[in-house]
Amino acid sequence: MRIIKESILRDVRVKGPRPLKADFHLHTAEDPNDRVSHTAKDLISKAADEGFEVLAITNHQCLTFNQRLLSYARERGILLIPGMEINVHHRHVLFLNPPNGKKVSDFSSLAGLRRPDRLIMAPHPYFPNPRSLNGYLLKNLKIFDALEYCHFYSPRINFNQKAVAVSKFYGVPLVGNSDTHFLPQLGTTYSLIYAEKDPEAIFQAIRQKKIEIVTRPLSHREMGTFLGRFFSMKLPGKKGGSSSQEGIHSTRRFRLSLPFRGAPLSLLLFLSSYFGDRFDLF
Ligand SMILES: [Fe+2]
Image (tube, rainbow, N blue to C red; front, side):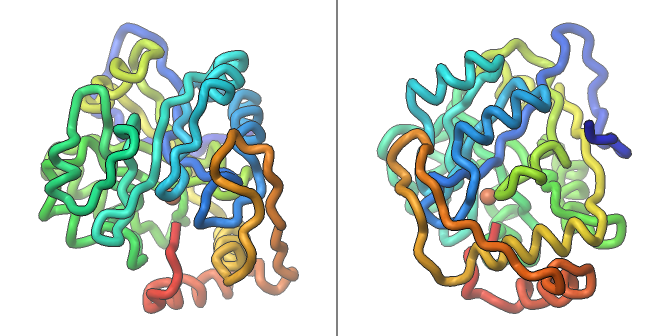
């Protein structure tokens, strides 16, 4: 059982439905870009064990959602919402309940797809990463229903702070997500949504800030481990499995040797992520 050391953002004290434990930014082995080990079913099972009730699998440019996965999740008490992490101007955007087969080429076409039964979120918007929105966020803020508070931070290094400031200044809701690529990341940051267990009700609750974020900073050891594994996952190599089905495909698991997991290297990797534009991060 994880110990939640910190809870942030209690904008609205809500009476009514009990909160739903939710994470809307999750990657699985079906992801065509990232070499993720766990399948969608692995993730759903682990999330059910941890008491999650709402999940969105958001693989890159790929919808990992079908009737069998929906049923598999439902049998475990989880509402699975279709989702995708799309590229717009080479920047990552989370799109929940995206339209089928529509290609989003730019921010104006994304704006045209806004609807109450869809949710558009800015993932890790100010992380030092060429795929994060950074300057594009404020230019297109009206498109976004919510900003992400991402799990990847430590007590000393927290790239979420600017997103928190933007959220407060412009009144845009914040949502806690893990951006899980490895199962130990799940549960480090998540959201409690005060809504009925229905996608549109959940989206409405997010827009109304009926949400709390439960989060804790990672230890430097965790940061080093996750970042080391993350970079190894991004190194050129053969992607195992296909993205088309529900996630029974296995992928080759990369493990770095122990020195690669240390805290000092995490800082080095941070700097390299800042300057490197060859990696499609997070
Ligand atoms: Fe992601």
